[in-house]
Length: 58
View 1 (cartoon, rainbow, N blue to C red):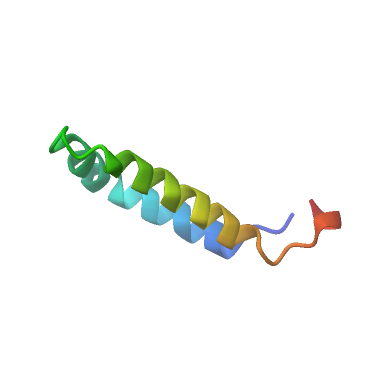
View 2: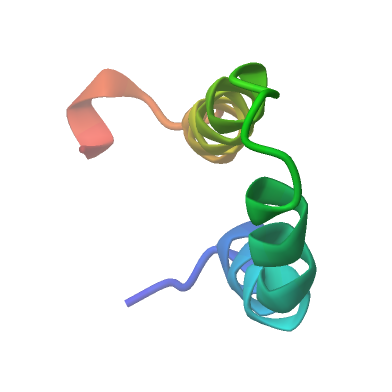
C-alpha cells in the first residue's frame, strides 16, 4: 500500500504544532472566525492531497 508523503508530512506537522493551535484557539473567545480558519485549512489540505488521484482510484 502506498503511503502519501504529503499526508505523512501533514500529520507530523499537525502533531508537532497541536499545542500552538490549541493555545491560539483558546486565547480569545471573541475571535469566532478562528474555528472556521482551522476547518478551512483541513479542507484545503485534504483537497490538495487528493487532487492528483483519478476518480477510479478511490
